Image (cartoon, rainbow, N blue to C red; front, side, top):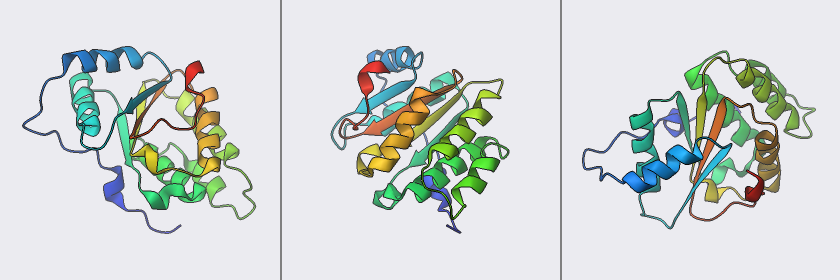
Length: 173
């Protein structure tokens, strides 16, 4: 994969007509103490706007990946995840990028392991937002994300924004 669409990595701009949602913001604050926050609702309910507003209130180190149907290819998905992390710190995911480029790659687990090791070395907390996760249908991607969640460093929090609950074991998270 040669070129990445940089706009998929942009944190959406904060809307000027943002409606304060203190109860939902408090739930996001509570959820940030866990491995994963799932924001699930039908289209048009303001999920992305809510998360964007929450990020601006808390000023964390955050990276954002807007997903689309083309991201169902595991190599493409993880390449974008690596690029999202590198948007915050260019040194993150250097080894993972080499692994994902390997023609011998059979599973994305080594990519996740490399990212986990890199992130665990950071001295600050980090949030990864995966927007429109409902478009992801590839089992190998769900398995890779489950692996990342199972072994997630304590300084990483993942936010999934979706229209439907993903096929992940959410109860244990």
